[in-house]
Image 1: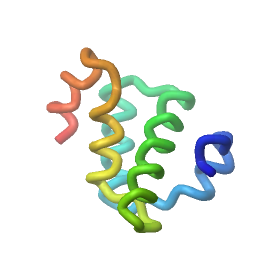
Image 2: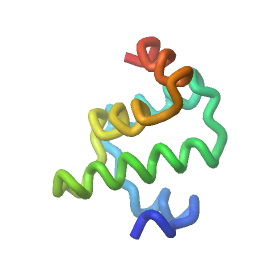
Image 3: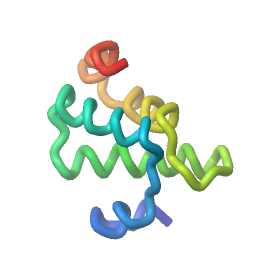
Length: 81
């Protein structure tokens, strides 16, 4: 379902816990994510949470979603943690 969700709908559907929100804020600055990149990461994190069978997106789901970004972007992931 989230594959077809636009940004506004995804923001309503995706529920992040406090740690996941903090990680997304840090990652947005480090990776210089614009709305499109932010929502792509959010969609992947939402899918990961769905696969695990939980409604709340947590920090590990966001971290995993970020790890799937391009190799040069992944190198910056060490700065986020």
